[in-house]
Picture (tube, rainbow, N blue to C red):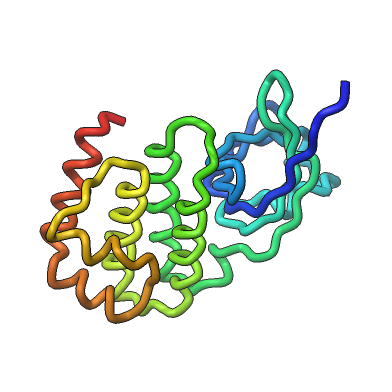
Length: 193
């Protein structure tokens, strides 16, 4: 039986070992959405997949969909965000990845979420340590809005209209942070996830 090979850009959000040498990775992909894919023997030192299948890596990944789920056939890492950015940015990578894995349910293409996360994680290299909490709040707010958990309103619309990340918008987040966090917490509570 032959399978169609899907090739797409992605960001590895979570990696879990399985058995003696296999792994499963949650990959936020440009074309397929958030998927859980397996890689056989990827923890072995001789595996060609092992170096690229690290958490927080930007990858070009090739996959097949079998009866038992997604399987990785090839992967090439372009950058590991955990090591390419400043040390203080690592916490944000972890926190946002946890929210994504928890809140995105089901497999369907979500190109806008991929691009939002790609821009947010790219902006990490330019953010001062004191602005990281503001970037985290803004990123989570925008993700929850795109997933339908946050409705627009007078307070949050100015943060949802533009999808770019810059110093000016982070300064505006500071002024409304308490209200934004309240909106986020309400959305997380109501999602019951």
